[in-house]
Amino acid sequence: MTQQKPTLSQVVPVLIAALVCDTAVTDPSTGKNNLIGIFDKVHVGTFPTKRPMSVYIKLTNAEGYYKIEVRYVELESDRIVAEALGELNAHNRLMSADLHIAFPPLPIRKEGRYEFQIWANSIFLGRTFIDAVQRTQA
Image 1 (cartoon, one colour):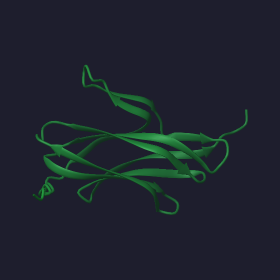
Image 2 (cartoon, rainbow, N blue to C red):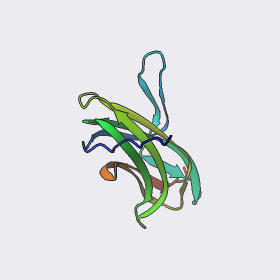
Image 3 (tube, helix red, strand yellow):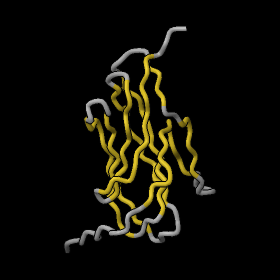
């Protein structure tokens, strides 16, 4: 028996928040999200380097089935360096939906801005970023 794929929702969700952090977890006893080490700047001693990162995403106005894509993009070259794919099944547009995307160590080739671009059903919702800067000697 072939399982039918869910129909993609036509409702466009609204991105409320997108934050880069060291890790994001949900407390199983309270359901609260815990974001540890929120940042938008990475101080690098030597380029190139790699760093693990997580992205916390909060959506509202979502109802139905969504294919979620988060692209890690080096802005200067507009090159997609990595991407994460996921799914969301939202049941009530008035409720918010939280997602945690944990990336393995991501490459940071050189100084500059790197974006995490958030897409739902191939519709761009928004972005967050990090800036990679050379660590200065004290």
